[in-house]
Length: 387
Image 1 (spheres, one colour):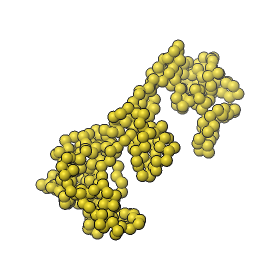
Image 2 (cartoon, helix red, strand yellow):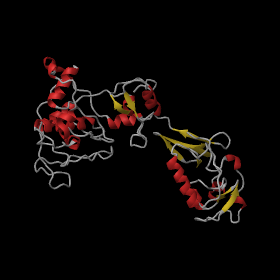
Image 3 (tube, one colour):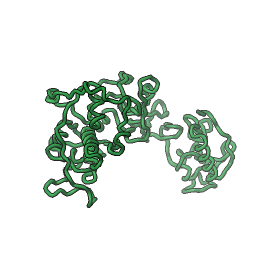
Image 4 (cartoon, one colour):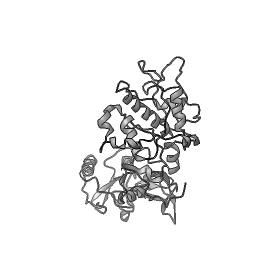
């Protein structure tokens, strides 16, 4: 990466200069034209009086003649230059905009005292440090997406790859927020442990060497869905497994994606949808006793954790909350859920014979940066405070 390249600039019209900068950014996206701790393109060693020497000192709006010589080019003192802060004179902000406080830099851009920037999940404020120098004072929350966690996972031989998903809705979340908003399954009730698990060990010889559900069932197995910022993994996994099994059992005649929103909003045992965790056993009980309508009838609307939808499906008249007048409002009910053992062969045979299964996962801090491969806890986050 080029970090200290300081081009010798000629006097060019600003529209042409902008075109050149855009072209360079496309051809060499990894190069930086902004020297560290500078206000591009003029470093601190050229500070002095520039706009102050003009008459008038500053120009309102855009004025391409509002310039002052600097090095072998010119800098600007018109208000237009402050839009991108790339060609203003070194004393423009103090002279023309009245900024006299501390100055902080972030990715080569100048920020004045009191301004804030976001670094991961933390907000940093430019404040006066020693003397008149500015310094960033940042929050100390542990972020959900950590570069060091992803780097350590990818540097090891753990069998899976990591990514921080920069710019996604995960980026501004703290670890506590991520745990609160994106998990959501309660530890199974005690009576689950009293259920007798199904054992397929005697049928293991019937399993093929290789198996891909996409080859066997194709579109009968639905896509991975996004629960967004809603504590609803229990509802999504239940309706996804039920939808896939319904399609497989009906030989593809029933391809409905069942409504996770109905489970969230209409299950009375889940008092605070998207906020409180839900129980897998309660969701299957609801689908057995009440039934669930398709997604087209009752679409998911609680992706924002603040948008907690009340139950809007009335079984008495079967009216769909969606605007689709032709949506299927049929209630699909399920047979009782059953338990599998932890034996790999039993789980393989169940998937091969009947379709997707549902499992609960104890999530550790490194899981949030999972991208691909077979996940297992790595221990690279062991230095973080215990939850």
